[in-house]
Amino acid sequence: MKQTFIRKSISILLALLMLLAVPVAAVAAETEVVLSGKAGDSVTWTLTNDGVLTVSGTGPIVDITEEETDEDGMVCVTTLDSIGITFDRYFNDHREGMTAADAVRLRFDLCKEIVVEEGITEIPAYEFDAMLPRRVTLPSTLESMGYDAFNLLYAESITVSSVKLPELDIYVPAYADGAVPYKSCDEARESYIEQHAAEEALEYEMLFYDVLYTYAYMLLIPDEAMWPQMEDESRQEMLDLYNKRLGTQETTLEALVPAALQALNELFGTAYTDVKEIFTVDVDELGNRGLAAEPGLQEKIDAKYANAGDDDRLISKPLAMENVPLVAYDWFTVTAPAGGKIEKDCKESGVNFIALEGVSVPAEENENACKYCGADHSTGFWQKIVGFFHNIFYFFAHLFGRM
Image (cartoon, rainbow, N blue to C red):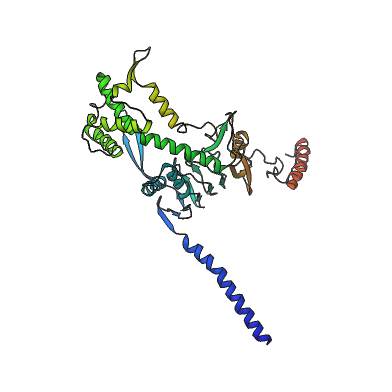
């Protein structure tokens, strides 16, 4: 009887363990690589469907570039391929047919976290600026990082383990004096989605406005006409773009005008029959000539796309930029070795700073380094007690010429 009870108990326990194991296996199966590549001889990277981008290997991240020298001897370097460019291509392939707002959400969701693993030594400029991660983790082996390598405007945190980076030349979220800051990262993101959607709608829907503007430039200011001066290939690209938006198949700019007028009237409830009713020649005090839209139409455009503009509640600034009256949001945090330039910049910029446990910058670069033993006693109650007594020891040692 007792053995039967034990056997039944074991069976039930095994069944429970198997049930618990099923979800774990299912979760593991759901994580798969959606994008991968090489970024140097010994560097590989993967993007998984849970939104984590991981860079692994040793040495620097290397992009494929092309150099050209112009007539003045200036060298122009063009990036042909990189992690960011590959990500952008993938994003554009998957955003077809989406609304602008859904497309921005997709960009947020495709890459939620960037992890650069131990062994990576260099990150080129603008490498990850096409992504909008929530979190970024950098290794202790990192020695240099290019300008604006990350876009942290809508991130929650960055962790830097390296003691070799004197500063973070990356952009962080901030708000201007007198503006009302967002209360959370999610609130800031939703505002960005709304704003970006309005901007993209403006750009897309107003292509027919470009048709009329370009034609008016030819009609009203013929001696400054830009259309005849364009290369045939450039003109054809614009015509293709206009035709796609207007649903037409015209071969000349003039032939597109009726469809553009109709689209404009339908969108804004106007009744324009001629381009001259929309645009007038504007001559300013300097004698420069240009086109001015009819005031009533401009007001309608401004009203429809009121959210398509810079939001002064959320701007960005380099973390390393000093003496700027900006305060970072409460929801953004930098974790880094204590006592270095990064900590100083964070405190001066109002960015939340957390000292990396067990790591501090070299004593010669550490502003908090103890003059007696070289350690950093600035964090923790007991460390501060030790620092207090070490200051006393240092005073007497220095007084009697022992230090």
